[in-house]
Length: 498
Image 1 (cartoon, rainbow, N blue to C red):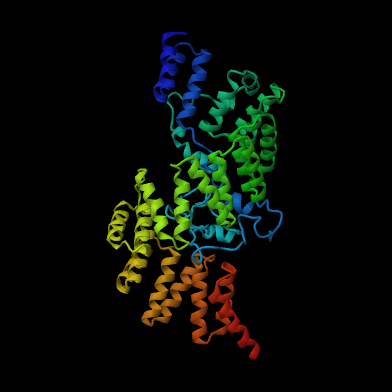
Image 2 (cartoon, helix red, strand yellow):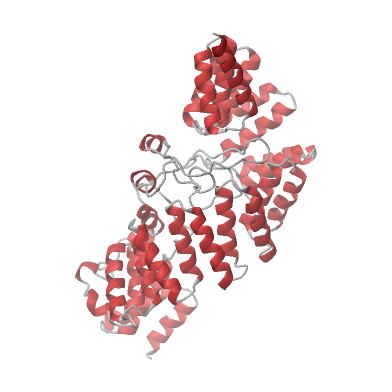
């Protein structure tokens, strides 16, 4: 081993990847056929841009709308993440994000992606930083996360993929795996990476589980979900690995088969007892199915296994708040504060929990900190929560101003439009209220509040047909809403009398 290579290897082990790459480049300049330096440089370049592609997965318009693998158009309740259809517990109805998903403790994979069921809704989803952002394909995120690898390199790219002899390098066991990861993570070319994996798997006579997982990763990112499922299942039969297990779970989530994903999770717990990542996936799946009781059960197990798990702590706090237990929620949010989490969302939640816990001396200071830490993406939610405090203390002018500031920060904040409409009704401005409700309903068609308010206004004005149409949309969004059901009963009695 030469001195220069030993120094490059030492830098690599110290995770100084850029310096290690420069050292390898110097070695290759002197001896271009140095295989060890070539492989080390590939590894260093790969780790510079490596991302956890399991947690970074998003679905775009092409994945959610144009490719629909669902077997049943109207799935049974509790068998679909897109249409859970199960009973909703908690404080009335948990609010949803602008992509239509229920508000959760933290932003998780998929929570900011488009969940529309048709192309029209998908194209209406705004493409700004403060809302759900529909990307065009799943591979788009990987290119974005590896932007550093796309910068121009002096002297051209390290490896010319178009001139690469794939069969030669795939048969070399010392080069094949680093080369695959370099092409997959650094160059972001899953088609060529798939060629390398197929050739290497053929050379190993299908005895190496690594290449089955590699082919599954490429199939998944290329949209061939069923082929990815087959490869991951074959790899799990040969070798039980947590990474393969989580990727198979992601496949079934993409296919909208949560029950199959839960079966994989339960089977994985037999080999990896109380593994935090598997328990977290189970909690997410149950939460997506609106089964909050089981979701909290697994989140609490996660906290017992890992007392610093931010997602579990935040989700448990959110659950207690929406079940009329703000004091308990406050304990969990304070735990996050003790762990060193300082952001606008946390202080926003602390402020609203302090207010409902009647700790008024801390409420204002928490909201002040939230405003100081807020960015363009979350300032609208801070002002929206401040408006709730103002309404509760009877200061309607401050509430009106806070809601207008919320809309000014995010002109697609449906809840702010809805509450502004309610304030306009209190002022006697029915026409303005109707326009606010209409705007809220157009932005968030999944929300029942603006539809019910529109139905109630139309009923008071004597426009029974409009009231009937609006209350039907309200019940479609929230079938158990008592006021909507009562209004629908009144309308049916009136129509029957006519």
